Image (cartoon, rainbow, N blue to C red; front, top):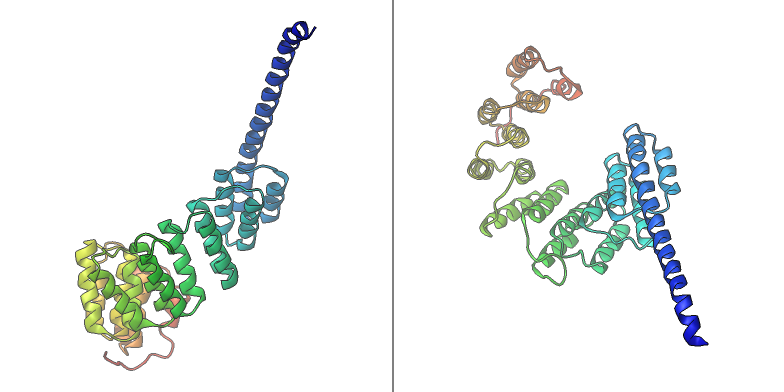
Amino acid sequence: MEMYVLPNILPFTRKLHRQRVHSLASIHIAAETQQAHALGPLATYCESKAFSYARQLFGETYHWDLISATSIIGLFARHNRHKEAIDIFSRMLVLDTRSNGFTFGPVIHSYTATGNITTAKQLHACATKVGLHSDVFVGSSLLDSYAKLTTTEEAQRAFQDIDNPNVEMPDRNVVSWNAVIGGYSQMGHNEEAVNLFVEMIREGLRPNESTFPCVLSAAANIAALGMGKSFHACAIKSLGKHDVFVGNSLINFYAKCGSMEDGLLAFDRLAQRSIVSWNSLICGYAQNGRGKEAIDYFRRMKASGFKPNSVTLLSFVGMQPRRPC
């Protein structure tokens, strides 16, 4: 009897299998369609700052893949909605959605913005657990977080660990150097920032447009005019024609050191000028007791079509006598 039942039941089981596969495929397609339809409005809500609606829409969509979730985290982070970005990342972990380096970048930024070093360290542990501690961009972002939220000793330890492939990243690159130089400069450890830049050059790394504003700010804070001039020469050698951000940093550096002739030369060589460029020059003249030049360039700024802002006007408050470097 069994030999007659088996042939009759096989077509039926095949049909059930096809129906099941079709049902699963339909569910998967429906989930993808739901994501696609939700992502556009969600971005619109974020751009129009309707974050409560964006958060509600995210909660109503039950399945998000890695790319969609990463895009949403980036949207919230860019609009400084760091708590929401962190919450979405936490949901990714609960749903076992595997993260990548592009996910961790904005999340680390959000953790850093909240100022909570404990959660930043937990994120570091999470990155290590999923094998992303060796990703150079994740490692550099973590280093930037340590530099901004912890003591210089912890940031330095994290930076030194980059040499050990079992701890942080396989190589130090310009991003990781920029992170630690910028961190030291922001925390007021200017000599350490300058020394790190020199060490970076000795190791054969080529600084970029993000490196020079950090190290020039540090050199200005310790009035190291000679060293800053060597950094200026290094910028010309490394970058050729530098951008407006490096140019503004040079103007500000020379102004703080009282060398307004060099500051004016850096200003004149800028291919494009911003309101920051004009303010740096005007403020430099004002702080060095050269009010006539400050007023003259204030008039030139207005004639060039730039409108003075609060920084421009504050430059003239309490002009200081000239104090050379």
